[in-house]
Length: 116
Image (tube, rainbow, N blue to C red):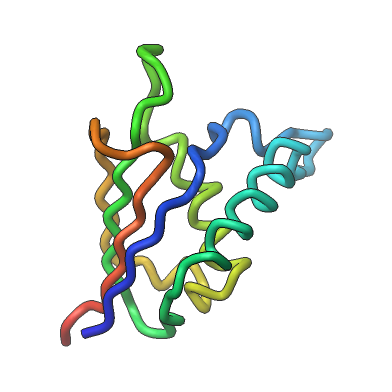
C-alpha cells in the first residue's frame, strides 16, 4: 500500500472556479490562482505518484465561521492533484471522505492505494 499526506491551501468553492459562457463551462481566474498556490505547496512536499485506484481523505480547516457546503471545495483540490501528477487521473479516486477539522490550516489530503 502506498500512502501520501499533503497540506494545500484552502481551495475556492466550485461556484467560483467554473463560469458558464453560453453552453460552455470555463475555469475562472480564481481556479488559475488556486492552481498556482497548490502547485507551489505540492512541489515543497515529497509525494508518491498514484496510478492505481485510491482512497482520499480531505480534512478541511474552516477559514472562518461562515456556513459552507464542504462538497463544493474538493473539485479544485482534485484538479491540483491531477495537474501536479500526484494522481495520474482524478478518476482514480474510488473512495472520498470530506471532513471539517480544527487542527488544519487549508486542507490536509491523505491518499492511499486501495487494497485488492
